[in-house]
Length: 474
View (cartoon, helix red, strand yellow):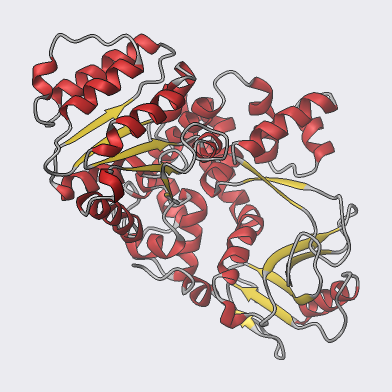
């Protein structure tokens, strides 16, 4: 696999940042800072490594460890500094800075002044967790020294909430850095990498979440069942290990949050049902766990989209891969480790079609928003609608705004089955549900998204190929 299919936008952004460093800055301050965030194992470090290699300028690449020790961090930083190709860095041998102020001042002392350089601080949230004062120290050293050198400082982190907060008002580094979000590879990238037709590419995206490490092990042209048959029995496969490491890194001690996440991953969506599935947690404890999960962007919340306010909140795992792992792999890891991956695979394939039918819905909503030419002109958001009883439940609702719509622009259904197209019975159900949707009437347009088309005329149908067009490969 070419790890940089779909990464041209990010590489171009990094090139522009380095170009600003080379071009100099106002008042003798050519230095620039960039904060890069993205989910774990999405390829941030590999992206920056490629960028550094292409840039061909002196650089320091430092990766923090997860060890809760300031001394360990400083020792690793000093070793990386001495081993870097920054001019004069080797002459710092024997130095042993005891604070980040001293360590960053040493860095500043060997940055070239007559040409550009790059400094990378990978896993920045680990450093800040071990020394909360690092934010202020970094701001001071950047203002007084680093910004006066032609250097591009890149901070990388997987804790999305923390990385986003670093540049917020009231924080020491506010407005000093450009932000760059590195998303997973999208369904179009997956189709290109694996050579899959559109419907199978969406399937592969639901399993891999667009994570390069998983796609790197995916044989070209292999469908989901073919790929799973090869890797599920392997306890060291990226498909299995990536989820374990992501959950352990995000929630090393928050056992309640992990229990709640497992309940959501198993398919529970309402506050009450999640609490029951997580062992009957008290409401206060459940609220704290859900607040933590949503703050970390691991869990997303949605409410019914219509012209009427609703408190029927649903919770879902935000990352497609983690959603798959929690449903099919995480709970059964011991089974795989004792050599019975065949049981895991059989369970997975038996439930795959039903699970996929629901898991594809948020992907379809996002894809439709990327294709405004397929939607009524006044569509600004695409969501779903449901009631507490589940009758009606509508897959697709387009509106001018959310969470409470001013006008409903369309009502739609998702039929993502391999053998059965959208038929007259489905159309009758959709029309009946439209009548129950606040803000919709018989004039509200209908829309169908179907994996295998429709056997009934008179309603627009969007297929997998049209959806894939939302993700042109750069």
